[in-house]
Length: 320
Image (tube, rainbow, N blue to C red):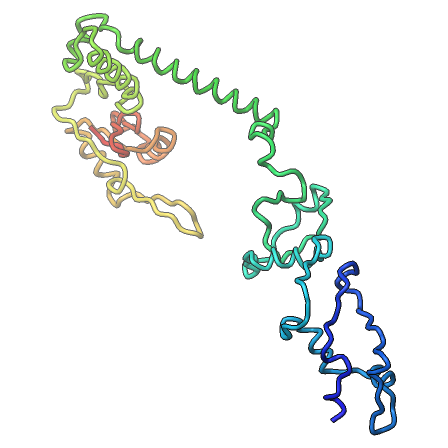
């Protein structure tokens, strides 16, 4: 029953706001009328020295008792722990995906960072914070981050683009001029002479096509010369070199090997009496000429034709 006999039950507790909020409160000793003797023979002062858990609970929860005159206490900004504030900010940001590997720290080490907080690989980088603790990229214009060598390279590239565009326009005008003679105009009936833009464009394409056809068409318009009356034959027989007169194959042990078709020597000697023999191949001269020399050491074949006599069209060499 002694715990219900509180000496200051009807009095209000006065709070001193001049002291910090975290300082312990010191209670004044109670008056003489509050002294009493406990059944165990202890005085009221000795009783107050012992902890009173019911009173401690009332002090912790000041809002529980409406009779106590308490005021809300606010903590100053200086009392906030920087580490706790940093943890609260980074806890809301997504962490990097460590399953793809640990993020690289090369940029942090090479820039000589003087950041306040150490680098933490498990924390995501803040969007407004520059890498390495340096100055943010948004503080200066974009041109400030371009080196002098990069500026020179971009300037040189712009000059080359302008030169290419000027050359393309000038070349189109030059190739689109009128035909110089009637033979050229007759050879290109779809691009007659004139000063219209469409006519100039057609003439430029025709002249450019003639230049490219130099590499696509045969080297000579007349592949075979006129026959000599002494050695003239009534007919001309054209033979293919690949898979008709010889057969070539490749193996790991021997590399490329060529074999003559059985009876090819008798075949060439017999037909040379009645035909003008011509071997036509799509292989270059440097490749096919040594083969023909071995195949026909007595020059029974009158004329050999190589790749230079073919027509290149749609990625294939055509024998015309």
